[in-house]
Length: 97
Image (cartoon, rainbow, N blue to C red):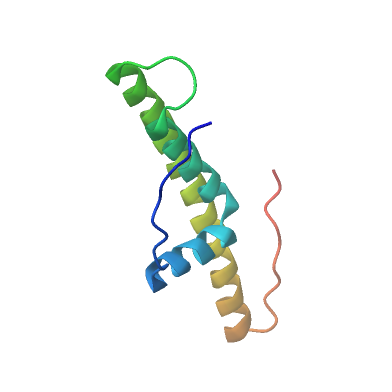
């Protein structure tokens, strides 16, 4: 195994914030890790640019889907909270799937 000579740098406040946000959204974190794995391309045979592009497009679609799902869940919760604050008699029902 190769030894990596890396210089440890201080983590910036922006990096700390990013890590905290990713921990709150594990699905998005997993998608970003998949994209980084494609970029590293350490395992298996070297891929062509077309193959890498296809993989990235697929992962970006998954990232978009996960992002929209997270956004929709948060938006629904926020709207429910706001409606209940405006009118406490409003009942919340979950959508049947």
